[in-house]
Length: 256
Image (cartoon, rainbow, N blue to C red; front, side, top):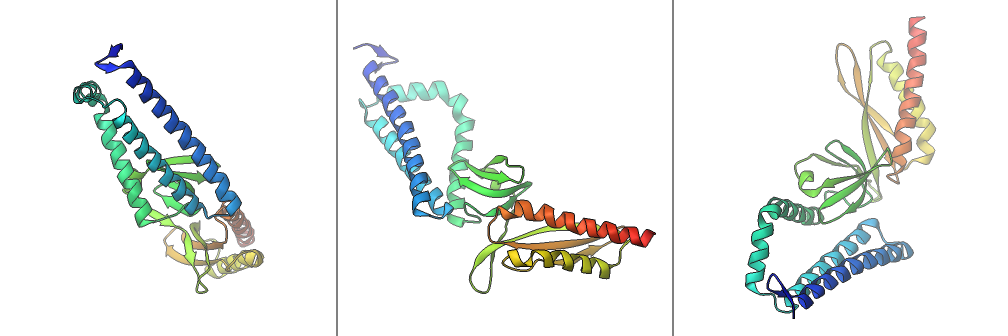
């Protein structure tokens, strides 16, 4: 039998077949679990954990199968390691770090799939937590993949909120700044009027609080409560626009 680098061609063919089967099986299983989760109405976090678990099992099975095929010789392993070690060394360390960080995130659970989060400068809905990356859907309808290793070095804000009735919803906060042309009493009235328009469609009435006041502006923290994280994408700009429209009207009256 012909040999390549001291390995039978039949062994190489088996390695290719095992890799192809593992990749195909991973895609089929992931697709099936996604469809099954939709039919069973499973929570996104449960679906993500199922998919991730089966991916790890398939990977372990593929590695075990590769180690058993034809009985790989130590000399061959050493030769391949010597050739690719320098090129893959740094990448392997990074991949291993991402993998460990991913396991830590799954264990610590600072957020789940479907949560609205801020991870450093990235803000949006968690779509998927993989071995290496966490995928976040932003307000611009773009999916940003953040490496799990980077997440551990960033500030994480999870907007999930637990009410007294043990009902989970989302509390989203953002800051709004105004100059001193309109009084604080009038600004409080503006917020109250705008919040009143949305109170019937939200699980809890929005609120605001003056967080700081300087020589040039006053800054308020706005609290919005929603049942579904995707509602934040439309609610925040809508509330902000209504507040600023009312503020512009009051400022015009003051300057007239």
